[in-house]
Image 1 (cartoon, one colour):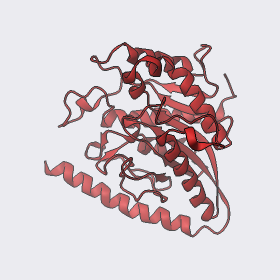
Image 2: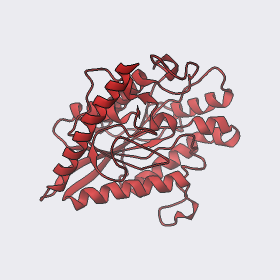
Image 3: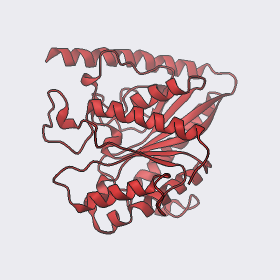
Image 4: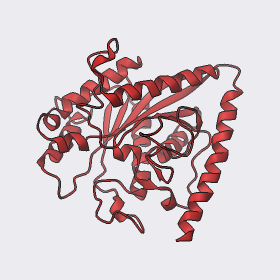
Amino acid sequence: MTAPLNVGLRWRNVWGRAVLAWGALAGTMTRAASVEVYLIGGQSNATGQGYVKNLPPDFAPLPTVGIYHSGAPHLNGVGAPDTWHALAPAAESPDRFGPELSFGNRLQALRPEVRIALIKHAHSGTSLFAQWSPGASGADRSDWGEQYAIFVTTVEGGLAALRACGDEPVIKGMIWHQGEADADAGGAAADNYAVNLAHFVARVRAQFHVPAMPFVYALITRPEEKGEARDTVRQAQRDCDAASGDLRAIRGACMIDTDDLPRRADDPDTPYPHDREHIGSAGMLTEGRRMAEAMAARLTAPARR
């Protein structure tokens, strides 16, 4: 049992040094430099249920990628919340990671000529129809869900911090893994998921003045014990993909498949041998890479419905 602990300690030390290095670099900027910003949101599979101890020995997050995230009780990552630092896990606890690691690495590899920065807010067990509801407009926040309000505050804080360093942040896209809570709520929450997702995407784009922002999202899991409402939300997610041909398709949206990804039950020495709900360590790395590849493709492809 000592090896995983040593691996985790080694990575925490590496990330700690990288956190300081990225922060120092940002603090010395004296002229405006464009930074591509990508947003991350959702519930437990977005917070991340991969484990640091299960990362491959040859995996290292790129220190050229920055990350800014919300704090407890939402996220408790390696780096301090509400501050820019080098790419590191930003999950519910420092021993876990989400799609941010492989998403950041892969996207930087696909877009080597640009600076990349990630802003993340996610909270486990939260629904789109309630906690992530973006309300009717950005002018009146009284009808915003709690998580949407925190998400907006986090994004605004991250953008302001970049500008304070002399950078010019440009939001280029968003990744999203959410929907399990709406499916488990059933009824209107599941039946209206496509409508609610389309409204959410439209509101995020309007909120941050990026009308053509690509939106890449993951298909939620279908554990055997879950009911028909899980299938309802999964079908809504398929229909919302821009290339689906369905009337509910969202312009600029792209769904990635997750059905083939290993679950937390498949992790070595897993403490959750029956958990088919959450994407596991290896699966989370694959999910992040798929999201990055889908995002890069959307950035270079002509706008489609």
